[in-house]
Image (cartoon, rainbow, N blue to C red; front, side, top):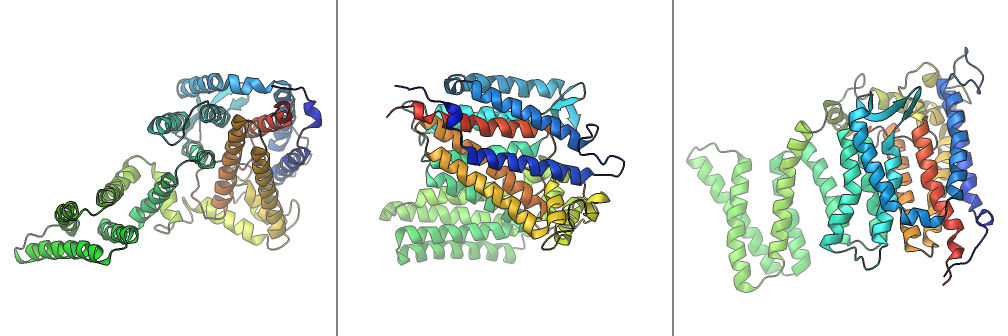
Length: 474
């Protein structure tokens, strides 16, 4: 049952105020980032800051359109919007324009539109629609498959456009699923994959194999709490390894230690499985699955890293992990960004006073690296204020999501939080060298109509749903 309410009286004006402040700060920082004496007017529409102003006014029109649409439209047409966006992502692969190596843009006259930015909205709507559907249980194999399809289909199409950064954003939707009761083991598995990926790049395979064995043994001891079973498992493995190492040495076979440790692990696993079956020891097969899965994943990382990732992506990851140093090459952007932010000190050099910015030392300083302009000109105080605004926005959106009476609205709200959080965390992290450079914009700050419009629509659909939440009677 529903009742009519005046949505304009129920708009969350706190969120709107934060949005307007972020957009305004973004605009003046774009002006500061590309400022030159030949184009001093901030209303010069031949410059990026002038064009951004046009995108901002267009965003305000989009807000009005979003608020004039009935809330049932977003629920009823969620799958239609998602399907249409999938078709557009397919079309851009054929008809798109290549920019900075990525075929992810439609070029219409002097206007470029990036569909991948808008695909996040469609995915958030479709995911919320499916998970909120009647009788859907999230922790079932069928649900896992369908949810994975909804999230990763657009991500794969975007990856095919050679836009890795935008594709990685889709992992953020895991936050929605955890809020709705996704098993904690899935989170543990995802965290393990990330850790193993990093370890596989930093350490030799032999080290990872030995480490995986001892981690599995430690988990086995924690689960069973039986020292005798733990000691037997450890002893079997050590004796098996010592035997094969001895045979390799005395027979002069010169077999790689990696293969010796793998063979000894296989033999010791078979011996202990027989022992475990005989003595009815629990969880052995699950731990062996974890152990061998970790080892297979470790070996696959090498293939993925060297055969699937582009050379510049490999160098960025190696530079981030400290495996390579290339301050004049792949590490140049981050190095100059850190110099710019650090030179701002506590209070900054003042508006239009940034030297790193003015002399174009930082590439992409009005788009992906806009945060370094804030750091240089406004210093620690300015960066703290901007980060505080984003934190306030995210916390406010969590509050809005939690107060929804509709499960669809709540899940969509967490989808908005997920996307914005990922963008803010990764963008700021990469400008200060804590994250790899994957080329995603800082919401409401980075230059570009597609990103501004997409983030605006994403946010204000939630505010539209929130403004009508009182229409739903308990």
